[in-house]
Image 1 (spheres, rainbow, N blue to C red):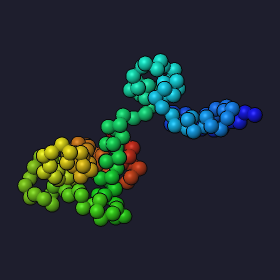
Image 2 (tube, rainbow, N blue to C red; image 1 turned 120 degrees about the vertical axis):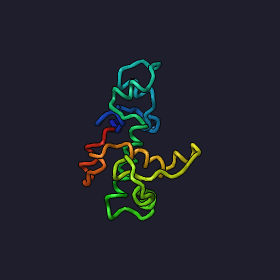
Image 3 (spheres, helix red, strand yellow; image 1 turned 90 degrees about the vertical axis):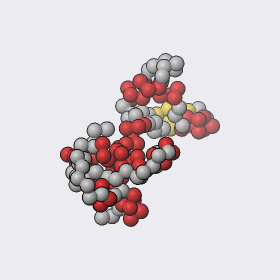
Length: 151
């Protein structure tokens, strides 16, 4: 007796697969690169980057930058942000009284020199925030900020 199981894949809204035994279900629940290439109708030997682009998935770097920007925005503009998160980001105006040509809401970069430390949230998110245009960083609302992000 064949059963139909709906299996949600990241690249499909919904899909149904006919399975003759329940033992096959566990191997089908985890999509892999070969299933992504089948969904995009490309050969298995093709590189995954164009396939993921065709499926509309963002680049990993863009997804990380988007999340970092949203975290900084929440830490700066929300009164409900955890104190530990808000303590990570300090405006440059609080650290130095010098007049610079940087925008008024730039964050101070921690003085890290090692590459490992530069991948920390504190440094990485401050770099992303300082790279955003002033029109984006001045936005107060969460939905408006999210819609204005370039990535």
